[in-house]
Image 1 (tube, protein in one colour):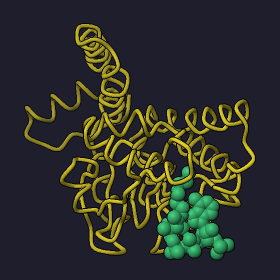
Image 2 (tube, helix red, strand yellow):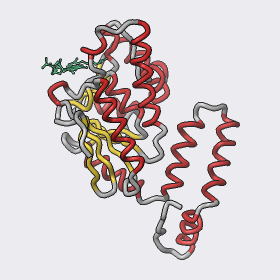
Image 3 (cartoon, protein in one colour):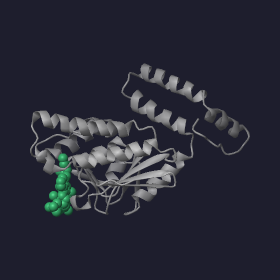
Image 4 (cartoon, helix red, strand yellow):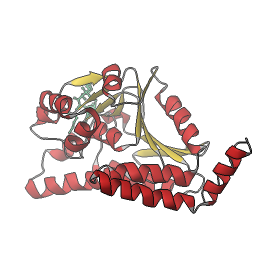
Length: 260
Ligand code: COA
């Protein structure tokens, strides 16, 4: 599959989506967002794909933000549409039925940090830098950053990062719970592949259920979230994978899940 601004390949059942504008530090132009959307559609439709990794080309940047050259001419109406377009894509990533891991190989700024936060997990190389520097441009984040950052790191630190525009290191991002693991430079994708392979070996319907329960349930009152969880649990109980998984445990062998 070929896209102008994104590389798409399948390695060992894992789709690797690489934002491919290294000369612009992989900034997210509208066309790049559209290519990411098409790549995610391809990954969703491909039965052989069990997980997705999103990364950026080169050693320097994951994604250095939305493309600033496209922001300069926005007005109230087009600015709102601009934000809603990116938010729509990032919500699709957040609720994607297969696990999505960001392999943050360098700068993850603005829309890049927001893209990483929309993924289910984040792995960073230890030279990675995270930040929401929009205030330097006289704007606020528009792709969900003001909402996902406080949910991930808490209100106090989120406001610190949003108001100062400061960048933080991978080590601090790890301490804050913003990233799940830190890898040596150049090894973020390899580490993300390791985590993805672990998840791909589990029951796909159960993995999907966990994603839905967390991503949808967390925005509900506890009682409703638990109701959703019980419904999804019931759906798992109707699956062949549940029979196989529990049977394999009792027979002391490895389960062979079929995603049915
Ligand atoms: N949008 C558009 N182009 C961008 C970009 C962005 N978000 N981030 C970097 N670029 C471009 C630069 O304009 C430059 O292009 P050019 O060579 O044609 O002039 C190229 O990428 C390299 O960036 P440069 O700034 O020269 O690299 P640097 O090493 O000096 O600085 C950063 C790196 C990340 C600190 C700096 O590029 C930066 O601050 N980028 C913007 C980050 C940001 O504000 N993101 C939020 C956007 S809403």
